[in-house]
Length: 236
Image 1 (cartoon, rainbow, N blue to C red):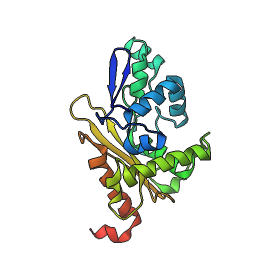
Image 2: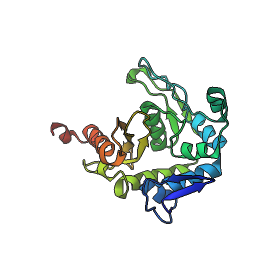
Image 3: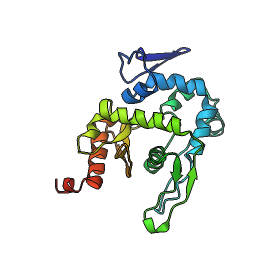
Image 4: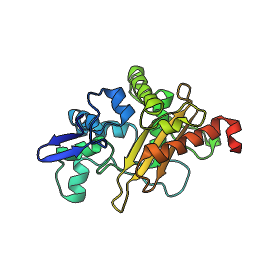
């Protein structure tokens, strides 16, 4: 990562303008390297990205027993042609690769996805009341691949962009994020679970116009997870 990625006449920037140098999947997750995921997304292609979005049941309501749930969208070439009367470009795939552009997700969808990563690949239907029981789907993802992602999310908090989540007495694994906002400053995101090696809870924070997930959203998730797991923290 040199700090940018050129595709035709367009230049796509990494959040770190000086770049991250040579990275692999683990260090790209740890440091949130945009350029790495731009290139991975292009190699996979939009069809494969959409296929996995569909497997995680993104772009549709989770079925949580709360009113007003929206579906979000996993978009794609057909959606863009129908909605905007425009073709899909490789630049759209680049944006899609870091969760931006036409991709829309709700916090509960993100929480559900991270729960599946944490629990070994089981996509569980969320409920507000535990007495309602749970429907679940086992995702076609290998244990080896899940372990790599789990390790990367652990690195994010232990020594990467989400390290502020580790300040509350629990081991957290998770990922920082930035959601585009057409009306002002970007929204800050962090999704994580704890304890990192034996997960019990998932939490997601989105701070409107918060700019950076690492500085504002990650400590919020760390504090929430600490409240749930460390009884003595509740009096603070």
